[in-house]
Image 1 (cartoon, rainbow, N blue to C red):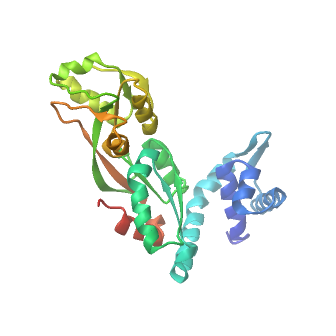
Image 2: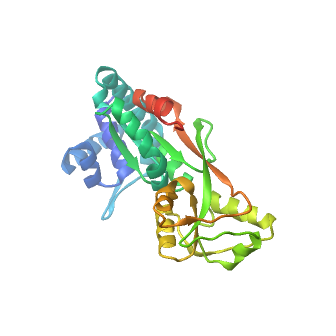
Image 3: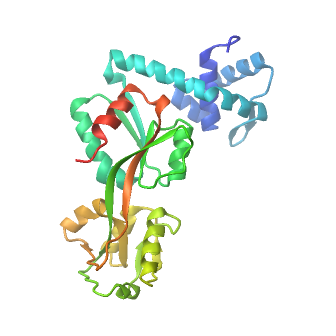
Length: 292
């Protein structure tokens, strides 16, 4: 970076990630012509073409991809160092970006945030409601989030750390009161299940297989809130984490199905890259991300 300045590389990385001059300008609070000028200067300094300009946006050239792979981590570390220095002087400048499925954000994360906000009311928090550990870990690898909270343990790179936060119960819920005495009775109902490739559905079907019971989804959705809503509409028995359905159960909008067996439990974990955590990230994870 000796022949140019840090700002050019920062602009380059943001444009590489957004693939849009408009989006990059919104993130960086500069005009699109300014971004184009910075990229032109960087290309001139390096003597290579970094982007293809297309009607739908921009795309990295081979040289651009090589440069991005080389500098994005360095840029992120500099930004983290800047943030840490500002946080040491003024915690109100701190910001946390968390990737978390909506049902976990509502039933678990929101309580953690409420506790933290009592101690640090000026800290800014962004929640990205992604589902699926692959999407969340990609966001983490691309530094779009500071850490991820999920109910499935991902296959992570060596540098990724996973910390278990809480064990959660899964339940069957229904519009009417149902008590199953013989597990085979489950085959008589329609079901609203998570995606068939999800770890929760796989574990459920594996358990039922041991009892020679087979069920299939009449409605399939990876959105927990939708599964609960479909149960409220009487579309079948839904399979959800208990915490997400507690309010509906309390209000008697749905009922927990009584079973002669225990359903598989899930674990909520936080996944992060240690070297990229800021001071406020570490405080939030250590002090506030824990079971009541």
